[in-house]
Image (cartoon, rainbow, N blue to C red):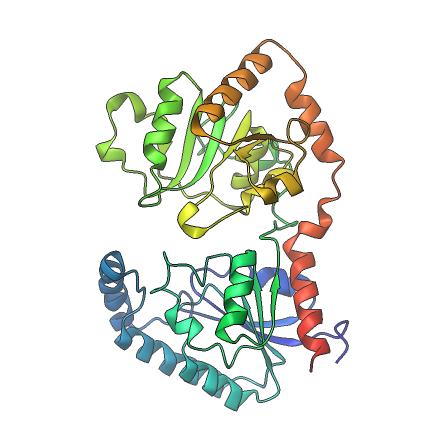
Length: 362
């Protein structure tokens, strides 16, 4: 089948499924099934609240009864749909062998692809992804962002695996001004270092970010699960439990003084989506030094990389002092970023390549 031809794709995910829009942008016919949009049963709503509590104890995100109900809704969905060319799975830990058997019965000639930024073979989320890994015999192709995932999936018997970058969305991530955004809901990011992310248990992010604030670094923290009630009063104005995306997200990155790049070590990250979104939005990236960050950026020329928390403080202070003194370091970095050929890191490019790989195998 020629990849230039429009193909029919069933996108399976959880949440709003923003990445399905990228497949649509590529010109394909995309049909979305997610627990967010299709499973409206009030039983599921109640069970999901229970599942969230259970996940805190076992890190297993769906109960057996929730899975049973979701599979029933999937069967109904397939009953009214035509056959698909590709099944594109993204962040769907509710997938089971039974679900994929049903899909294969419905679309026997389809190829099943998994694209997942999370550490599917790691210890931290092993309970969350054990159902997905039990489907390994049914999955034709895995696209994962870690060399360790690639090796471990092949060892588990995966048919085909490739390493991909987490990437950025070229339709969303670009330099954005306040005028274009026309929003007054966001806290001011100008003149501040910015960290956007989630408070992850065991990563000690709160204490590290508080130490930066204590050392007089102008920091703004946006994201989820920050323990605002437990923070001392002197830190409360620096942390905001606010989920931002789209143009708001790009605005915050591009208008900040710099963006702090922390990695999830429990997730075995060597880069994150932020590693590319800062490139795309022309944001000064101040990130943990890893082999992959060194491959993507020239330290001191296109980004500022640090190897320890103490070094992070020093680099941040030096950077801020130079900015306040009118030095050109930040503008030089942004200019150098603008010269990088970033299109190959876009999700549009990655998804197009992944689809070409699996379609050629048909």
